[in-house]
Length: 275
Length: 314
Image 1 (cartoon, helix red, strand yellow):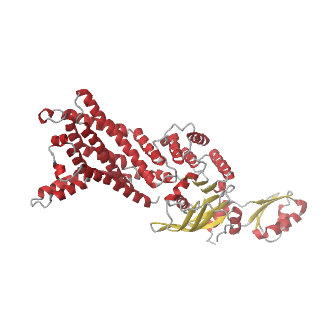
Image 2: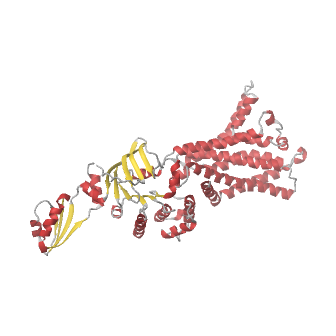
Image 3: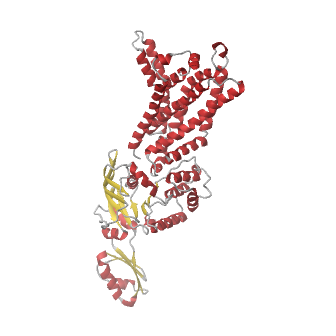
């Protein structure tokens, strides 16, 4: 456990040193503030709280932004150390390969937690102080922050898998962008394309739910837009998830599988790797 | 031919049993056998690509042998159970790479924490390799020699019992080389086992207990300098100092079983096969007062090395 902490602290320090943490906090903070301010305009007519609207718009944009930040943090984690030659020396220290992966993961998740907590959290605190609005939407907002972290963890883990599989950093960048495109853009595009083409309704409710569950970004979206009544009203999809039989616990478990599976795969590849 | 290591009840620190390593169809290490006993200083010599670095990586568990068995401290270094033993070993890779964005002090502190070494030990090590003043600078700004020194410092963290040093003196200036070998000698006295790969034959010959000569992945010879000298059957060189002007007459009186390499005015250089050495020395001493001095020139590692490199495998 001590080893994990030493390795995690190194990643965290690296994150502060190369201004990664600062940049992520600023980006997330500005995004949250802008969306909240813009989003507060139409609240009068819909009668939902400002924060619920913020959750809808933030969750929709986090789906794009958080995976991007997570992949940029993680794509270099393994291949960078292989390429520079620092991994060889690190492995002659009393650390196991499992500890190296988990230590890095812990460090990167910490970086992302700080960015989300200060960026998203800071924005909502500022907003509440300035507008003096009520705190009733806070649970949904907190849930959005927590699930954003899990979404980030998913893509950190996926980034490691890419990073341990490729031989060069340049390839890792390309593969990370590809991963982002597939999970964040293409998968949904294909799914909606298939639904539109599906005139005979071959894709039933069950299958559609399954297909949505397969993608970690879709599970994140459903989780955030449907878990709280106020939010789902604001998003205009009230009751959709429960009708589809997608409970919050199930959605969270799916995301956790998306964290664990790539980490395990990374470890398996790393264990067999010779330096 | 390989010198048999004398039977010892002491458990060897390292043992390799017909170890081979094939990378992508190419054999880089082929059926290598050797043992390193506690406290020994063993030097691996050989050209670039002879398999020295691969041997070290095998012993460190960074790669696994294609066949054969590697044992370090009695267990397979490629198993994760052997990781705990890494606390007692130090490694300096051939061209050592560090995290460039960190300062020298941060780098060493990071490695120290992994080994459970205190910060004060770090400062002491930084001073001892002459990096005390540069400790605040980022490693990216370090020269090759400074990186090498930082590499040495990290290898020494936590008083290792076993040191793997791959070309340790490249990039070090003569003063630091000297300091480095003094350090190695001191560690050796404390009973630290070390395995050093080196090109600098003249530097290591006085320090090592044993040499392992590698050529294209094959261990072509192993043993102490004397043993290697015998194996190589190289002629023994003698230098005889005689009274002025007597050199050529002395040479005539010595007879057969030797080669005259050089005749000066007062000096005579001879060489003979090892078996002929004692009779020759007796004959020289029988010459009486005309001979003022006799020196037997010790074997030089580079002679032995080039013999094994150029000659066919015996």
